[in-house]
Image (cartoon, rainbow, N blue to C red; front, side, top):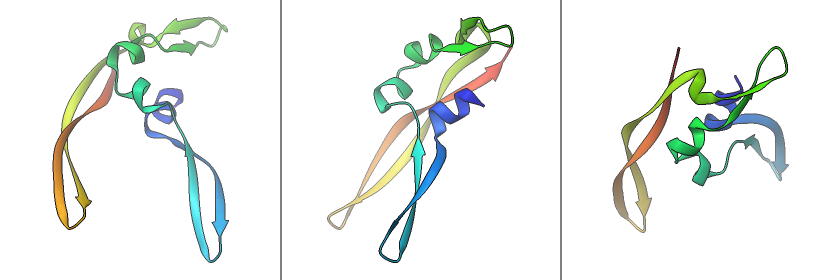
Length: 88
């Protein structure tokens, strides 16, 4: 759950601006989420209170996905790495 929240985000509150409501998510900064070596070294608390690197608990790898973004009437297409975990 900790890692899913850190990478994908966790809703923590909702803000209201006029008639609109926006969910506020908290997650790791992009430079940490996009760097698999840094993700592998993230310390995860265990039941005993010890902290161990994530790479000791799971294989971390990237799957490339397409990203589409509208910019001034044109579509910008690029591929981005999306981190995935597979538990040991």
